[in-house]
Each structure stands twice: as structure tokens, then as C-alpha cells.
Amino acid sequence: MSLPKRIVLVGPMGAGKSTIGRMLARELGYRFLDSDRIIEERCGANIPWIFDVEGEDGFRQRESAMLAELAEQPQTVLATGGGAVMRAENHPVLRKDALIVYLRTSLEQQVERTRRDRNRPLLQNDDPEGVLRHLFELRDPIYTRLADIVMYTDRKSPRLVVRQLINRI
Ligand code: S3P
Image (cartoon, rainbow, N blue to C red; front, side, top):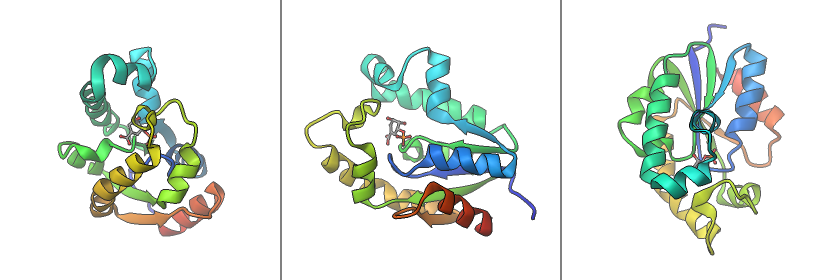
């Protein structure tokens, strides 16, 4: 099996990008990179703080810079944040030497998996489900267009998703 240099996971909040990415990396002997966690480490602050102080724009700038840096790392599985596809300038960066996997997840599952989550600033409001629906309508075509593989994750354990992914890589 000839593996792609990098595997990049895209998809909405609650798709399981971090959990699946970590397991997939372990199976392939690749390094796991989580864009949001590395941004937090570098910044010395969590994502809610960054949104609060620098606004979403500030976070997106950090995210674009981080994606460009991480695109240079071979033999990695990269979990991106759900909004990483929203800047067109990130698309060639995400694609560079990469197989892009879209973890496609229903709105119901997104809602279920992000319930009572305090670390996602976009969902700290009266209608997190409405936000997830709006973002999904906006982003689903972009994820789909970018992806080499669309993998459905509903009603599947992370282990099963990883096994099915390995069969398709
Ligand atoms: C965001 C998703 C989050 C994080 C930030 C913004 C988004 O990542 O990057 O809160 O715009 O969808 P996850 O998809 O890992 O939750």
C-alpha cells in the first residue's frame, strides 16, 4: 500500500476529527497533529479566549498560518477545525501533498456530540443547533468539493470509521 504523504481530516464540529485522526495516525504509524490544540499551545490560551480577545478574524488568521506551517510536515494526520475551509487561501495549503477526508456527519450527530460543550465559542448562544445547521448548509458543499474521500460517520464507532478509511486509502 502506498500511503499519501499527509492525510487531512475536514468536517463540522462533532464529526470526530480529533478522535478518528489520533486513531488513524496510530494505525498508520503517522504523527497526529490537531490544528486547534497546536494553536492553543502556541498562544498559551484556549480558543474561547482567542475568540474573545482577538475575535473570529484573529483566530482565522492564526488558523491559516498554522495550516500553512503544518502542511510542511510529512507522514502526518491533521485534524483541522470545522471552519478551516472557509478561507479559499487555505484550500491549496490543505491539498498540498495530502489526501483530504471529509468526515460527513448528520446535523443530529453534530448536535449530540457538541452538547454542553464550553470550548466552542460559535455554539455559546441560545440556538447552537440553528448555528450548526446554518454552518452545515454553508460548508457541506465546500467540504465535499475539497475531499478525495467522503466518509459517513453516523452510527459508526471511531474504530469502524478508521477501519473503513484504511480500506479506502
Ligand atoms: C470552529 C470549529 C472548532 C474551532 C473553532 C471554530 C468552526 O473546531 O476551530 O471553535 O468554525 O467550525 P472543531 O471542528 O474541532 O470543533
